[in-house]
Length: 256
Length: 248
Image (tube, one colour):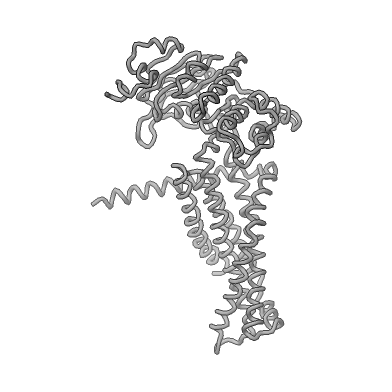
């Protein structure tokens, strides 16, 4: 009986969020010419988002590469010669696994942290304080995180790709009786620049998603510690969903 | 001068301000008193453009700020300093960086001058030499003082105090009151405070306005409010549980 008003309420809430999100994006775009003046803040964010995330990304990538090699070998058995394993691992990592897993790991680590930090600033009136000091919070808080996101995600993805391939190579050589030469030869044979660039394009989009969704949820936090917790969770969930949707969209455009 | 004319505001569908009319004269300190949740802070946030009214006007030196674009609001806000209830210091910055943030962002002065101003403002709130402390290392009273130093860093014409003494012990609260009074020695500074701390209101105010049920029901000097015939006003200033405000 109450389904129609409930659905109506949901549609209104969703439209409201989309509207606010686009306003934030609009203000962000307007603030982009100020990038050179915010170099110090951007550098700080790059350090946190990029350098400090590197160990987690590398650990994830090493095992992802190894697992990819094991599973590819399992699927090749009796159908495809194992000498093609390097190419399969390389393509899977560069096109899909490197960018997507890096995106998801960073959404969990950095997206959550952005939402929690900005959410706490919101509920303790620090964002209002910025406004009253005539400092645009979008320019001061969102823009450095956005620029850092779209620069550092591709950098992390390159590291991730490299380490995942190293993981795949190690497993292939140690456990699948492949030589280093045949793995690398196959990797080289199937490598295409378009694969790498497509993957990096994805990572740029993921960096934008993580930073914008984290900031948006932080800015729209209310209700104290509980509100900060909800915003943090929402930032990770929404970022992860959007990363997967963007992954499909970009894959269809670049590789479809 | 600040003139608030027929200000209405609903939050989450509930009317909070139901037609506020209030004038704050140049150079005076006006304190808005009222119960928690009456909309005192909401009123303060309208004055600086953090909230837009549903209807009504706010004139600052004759200019209606309710129709201001965001860029015009930012220009206006440079003339204001705000002390927030919880101080709202930036956790990631040191005390000195908090105070100098506005000056640095707006590139008003060279770095050497900014450092001098930070030192001067800190000395003014009796926190000389605390530039490198982090907000987490400070007590509640010290945070308020730093908040106050930050509020006056850009030499504002208007200072807004949101519950300046809430959460402080009586002695620390009184020292904050003294600082607020000391700032009044500059005749051009206009101050608006919101509080439910009557000791603070009596001490710092030239005039007191009482907000009740979304409207200003009394405006007058501290002595006038003490002698007011209104039972509603008397219940609040005497801090009685029974009376017209609580419908007992």
